[in-house]
Length: 88
Image (cartoon, rainbow, N blue to C red):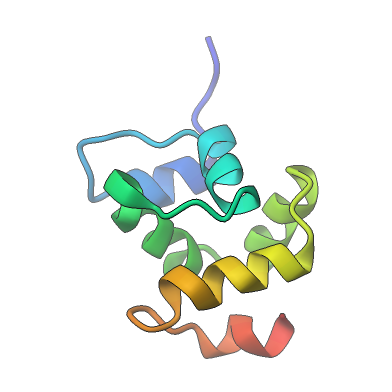
């Protein structure tokens, strides 16, 4: 049985639909709209520590440019994270 990661725990704490790390990575990597996972995506960019966001991106093959584009396209307007913006 697969254990739940700290990222999965953080992003899913307020929702009834569970989003796995792999699916989150796919959504970001393909620049897909968050759709039914909008809360989880917002939680990822707003609640997960920056060092974990960057490690997640690296581990899942998401280039910094794609991470930044996703954040700017779908998250920044509603859940700005100035500290993340400074890093990206």
